[in-house]
Image 1 (cartoon, helix red, strand yellow):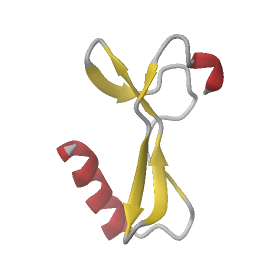
Image 2 (tube, helix red, strand yellow; image 1 turned 90 degrees about the vertical axis):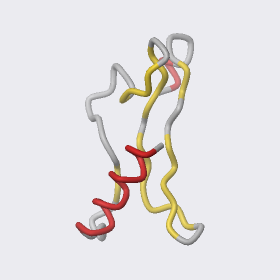
Image 3 (cartoon, helix red, strand yellow; image 1 turned 120 degrees about the vertical axis):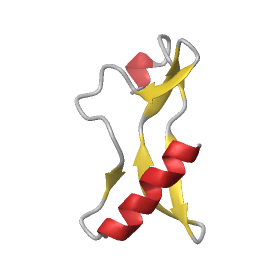
Length: 66
């Protein structure tokens, strides 16, 4: 994402559970809106294979609230 740094204001999220990093969401500010980072081939929350559905749904709620 470094090659985008001159075009976007990075607002990537580090999503934590009990102070531990459990996932990330690449994002930026575009026209005063929070958006998935333009130019990436993936848009959404990135996690490892151990992620559980209930926790992912909680993360969706947290990101939406944010």
